[in-house]
Amino acid sequence: MTTITARERLINAAIEAFAEKGFAGTTTRDIASRAGMSPAAVYVHHDSKESLLFTVSVEGHRSALEVITNAAASSSEPIERLRTMVYDFSLWHADNSRVGRIVQYEYHALTDEHRAEVATYRRSIEKTMQDALADGVDQGVLDVVDVPGTAFSLLSLGVDLVRWFEPGGSRSGHELASLHADLAVRMTLRT
Amino acid sequence: MTTITARERLINAAIEAFAEKGFAGTTTRDIASRAGMSPAAVYVHHDSKESLLFTVSVEGHRSALEVITNAAASSSEPIERLRTMVYDFSLWHADNSRVGRIVQYEYHALTDEHRAEVATYRRSIEKTMQDALADGVDQGVLDVVDVPGTAFSLLSLGVDLVRWFEPGGSRSGHELASLHADLAVRMTLRT
DNA sequence: ACCCGCCCTAAGCGCTTGCTTAGCATGCAA
DNA sequence: TTGCATGCTAAGCAAGCGCTTAGGGCGGGT
Image (tube, rainbow over all chains, first blue to last red; front, side, top):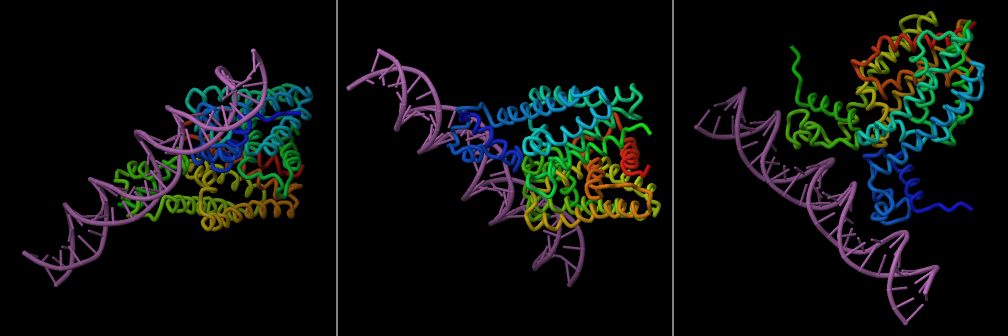
């Protein structure tokens, strides 16, 4: 049996609130009441509103990086690997659209130090995709003129899901991930 | 000689502020001081902070719709037309990244009535892209399995630019628009 | 019975928020 | 000179903000 601590309840409340109203639009009183606590309880378990955001952002970045890293290691065959990377990255953004929205849209609300720390995760994600494309070109399977630009565009497909995706909508995360994976192959396959 | 009215100066100040700090993170005092006026001056020319956002959002949506509509009418040859549509739509988002950020990320901050009004522009943009793909399929030039999903993905490439694009960065808007146009053709061309 | 340590809250502090009110300066018509 | 509309500001109001302080309630060890 897993016990959810008060600290974790506050983090989950912050995820809901930040995703719904943005960091600046969320009050600490809102977070506390979503967690069923008084306003002061926030400060028993967390240093500040911004440190709550940082906690959510770091864990979100770490999780997304883990997903794409595992996908990159799943195969050395360029097409199958690319398909898995795009599929898993897009699916992650659909399955975690609230955390993803905070990761992407509240990045600027972090302090300079915290933003710099989180930026290392972002560079790793981009590099993982670039390396997969470059290796596919080296193997003679893919044809990619602009590797950094194409890598960024493939990631954009997944990232942009968090702008509008809602669970229970007309399209499932798996459908969208599958579409993105198909498009990714067409964008890069040597003909 | 064009004269910039006080009302327009406030709108330009609001664009800067909303793009930089978000709607909730912007104060009316900040808008006023960027326009070189006292806090009360905002309310001489505009009803409320939200009505300023609505003004910016409507004009931004209208402009983006105009760009993609003109591009759709520029040719009846599917490939050339698709290339122009994706190019112009992405270039608009690069050239207007601050307004674009407000259009995309502050959509939820509008009142229900204002959001509904702006939603009609969004549907028109999506429909314009879908119609262009469907016509290309009918003409036997394009091969698109999922027309709505692919249309959305093509628009996502442009929209996602506003998340990170800054004028004067390492890549110009034209370079990125050109990349997106190339990728769009590869995604949809019949082989 | 007693006390300690852990969680939590009631109350509130100093400040900022969106917006209003009352009034002043300027320019133009008569 | 007078009258008046226009375009702006100084001052401030009620409400809400992030965060702090002081202390209450309660379970477990002795």
